[in-house]
Every structure is written in C-alpha cells, then in structure tokens.
Length: 134
View 1: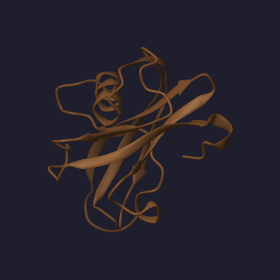
View 2 (view 1 turned 90 degrees about the horizontal axis):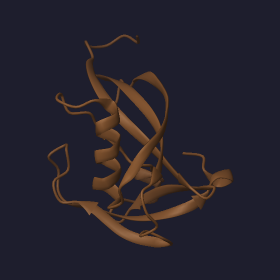
View 3 (view 1 turned 45 degrees about the vertical axis):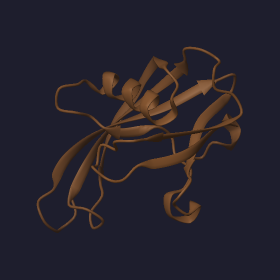
View 4 (view 1 turned 180 degrees about the vertical axis):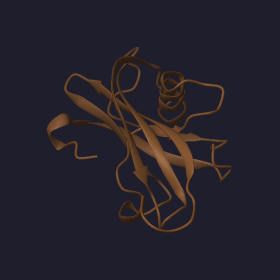
C-alpha cells in the first residue's frame, strides 16, 4: 500500500449488464461528464448482504431494471488514496436484464443514495460493447 493514513476497507459491487451485444451505462444529469464520466451500476455492499445480492440491488436501484447474474468476473483491491483513506474491494459481475422494458434512453435515479447525499438523477442507455471502455 502507498504511504499515508491507515485505510478503511470499503466493499463495492460493480455490474456489467449486457443485452444483445450492448452494455448498460449511465451519465449523471447534474454533474459534468468530465467529472463523473460514463458509469456502470455500482455501489457499496451493505454489511448484511453478499456481493451478489448487492449488485442486483444496485442495478435495480440505479437503473430501475431488474437483472440476474450470469457470471462472477472477479475481485480486485484498489487503493483510492489520496482521494480518500480507503481501499475498495470491488466485486465484478456480468448480468442480463430480466425483461426488455428499458430500451433506448431513460431517466433513473436514487432518492436515498447510500452515501447519504442528495437525490441523484441520471440518463441510462445501451452502448455497443465495442465502444465500452468503462
């Protein structure tokens, strides 16, 4: 680990939702693209849940679409210092949507973000996998 203060371990689940050769991504409506970038559903794993349960919850909460896990892709530890005194243990999953109710672009958001912040809104869409560099 890099020098600096002792790090808090934060477990996160990351979901790559794929349908028909396309990846589900979103951009924040109220945050510049240069700041937040293009993202996939992800978030903190609550102490009472497994990484698999967390990723399904995050996909539904962030996109409004239910999904099921196809594969567990792996785990990595990422030291985010000096941004925060944290090490993120990230669990990656491939998922597929349970239905075709979300096509094109749609709005979604969290009324109660896990970090305690304000309401967040974003625009979800499917992009071709060959353009997915997230």
